[in-house]
Amino acid sequence: MQQKHPIRLALPSKGRMEAETLDFLAGCGLRVNKTNPRQYTATLPALPHVQVFFQRARDIPASIAAGDIDLGITGYDALTEVVPVDSDAVVMIHDRLGYGGCSLVLAVPEEWDDVLTTTDLARRAQAGPLRVATKFQSSVSRFLAEKGVENVRVVSADGALESAPIVGYADFIADITSTGTTLRENRLRPLEDGTIVESQAVFVGNRAALARPDVLEATRQMLEFIEAHLWAQGQYMIFANMRGESEDDIRQRIFSQPELGGLQGPTLSKMITREGNGWWAINLVVSAQRLYSVIQQIRAIDGSGVVVTPVTYIFEELPERYQRLLTALDPKESR
Image (cartoon, rainbow, N blue to C red; front, side):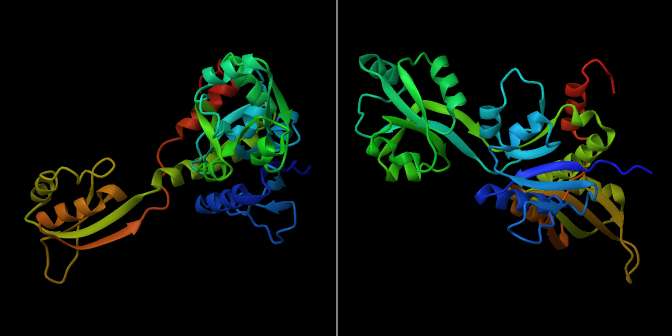
């Protein structure tokens, strides 16, 4: 029998993005088996038919667009820089994985007291040509054009862009920032309306590859675990005991409290005790923000023996994002 072509999944290969991606996937039950930190391939034990490749985050969108890689996790900033807006070669599978948050911003020297917005920047550029240093030439050029900022030359640069105005090869910069600390330390200030891209980790795929049933099924499984994990974050399962005359008695007491409804209603079951009947077990899921309040409400209706445990996954119906993916792949077909 002919062996299936392995499904190729690209993950970021360096720095914080690599570590956060591996931690995120492990939390989703999709642990990556990378035995050697120097190797550029790995396996995904939960999905044996998937071959993992490590690439720079900024190279992953191009690999997917070209069809060299089937699926990938990268930053939204890298995706918008590499893949044209009108391209349909790359399909968004999940646009908010919840980590890798950063912003691509225009930042000017602090001494430019008269430049607070892109309108001010456009006015300054009219007085004489300016240069902006960036790794994101396409995104920056589009943004400047949209804002009507002319007479600015986009200079391709790598490495520590913050030094560009000091060294003199650019007048201001466009760079990625998470906290703004590095910009402040180098006496640079983001423009008030100078955010080009708000970015975080995204899950994308090659359109042609997703036409393969094996790739689509692997994508569905990954989405199932990702969505279940994201939904479960910050959620706790509460178990408690309660003495009551009947199920209706317990039900009325539970719903006399405003926050004991759980996701769709608490689970109630009769306990087997040495004392005989009269004891019931309830369990429900609550968010971390509501945890203490819910425990107090359980005590208020004579609940006891409260046990709290973190929730790892919450699986519901077929993920909405998977339904959206099917529509994006074949809008005419009703599934």
